[in-house]
Length: 145
Image (cartoon, rainbow, N blue to C red):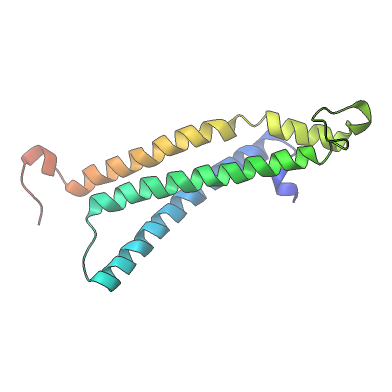
């Protein structure tokens, strides 16, 4: 489980980017899976705007769940060094491994930023793709066939 305790800041950033991209891809996959199921079960198409909104919601939720899990893993790793369970690390509990776990928990500011920015980026992707998909429908006022 060394991947969850990066030894340098680059590994932590790479993990944040990987989680962000994975949640985006999983969001698209789940939305199109639901689209295929709806088409098969009910025989109707899902409007594209619902696909974009579904992507934004699904990807955002996946991202928040992934970071909640990641945060709890880091927290539980750190709390495993608290031998007496008082929440304070006394000198016998302060080991080099505990310091690494503590540094991983407090120095990864990207975890906080990616949650907020990730949700915004997913919604921006959904909005931009909806505008591109409309093909100027908003400007000309004519509906695409």
